[in-house]
Amino acid sequence: MRRVVCPGSFDPVTNGHLDIIGRTSRLYDEVVVAVLINVEKKSLFTVDERIEMLTAVTKEYGNVRVEKFHGLLVDFCKQQGIPAIVKGLRAISDFDYELQMAQLNYRMSGVETLFMSTNPEYSFLSSSRLKEIARYGGDVSGLVPDLVKELLVERLRG
Ligand code: PNS
Image (tube, rainbow, N blue to C red; front, side, top):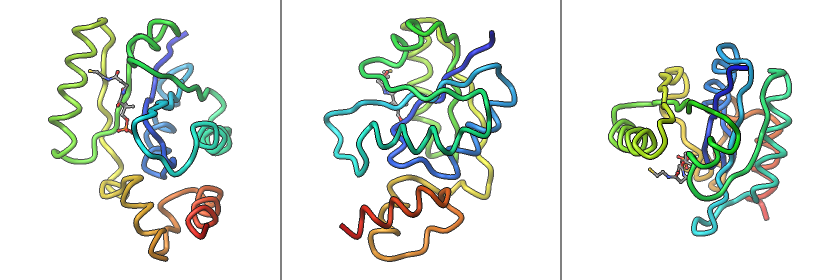
């Protein structure tokens, strides 16, 4: 079984994330989407809400499992028997941070990191920008799945 992890905060999942997860699911037998439990970072959605959204929007791929983790990603990989991490790279600005993390993760554990270039349609997209747009009444259609759009608008409307 060739298994890989797509980690992130996914607060919330965007079409950019989904593009990477979907393309990865065609290359591997199983994709484990791992949602970081980060008590230090204020989030819009709880980890369980994010898992619910991810589970719904990745169902059609058929080989995606959604889990949560805390602590080091490489420890989660070890527990789950996962030898590699897939990360989307949007632009050169992502690269420094991602390269450092990939090298540290490899140094700690031998877990490999593979970078997938983001679909240019989503190269400007991030969960933070998305929340900002939605918070001030901008239209996020086409940037997130419809289900996520509805929950986002509902949550931000209070
Ligand atoms: O969506 P994000 O917030 O950019 O995802 C970042 C994530 C969750 C992939 C990254 O912060 C992570 O792996 N955190 C877990 C802690 C860890 O293993 N840090 C790496 C030490 S080199």
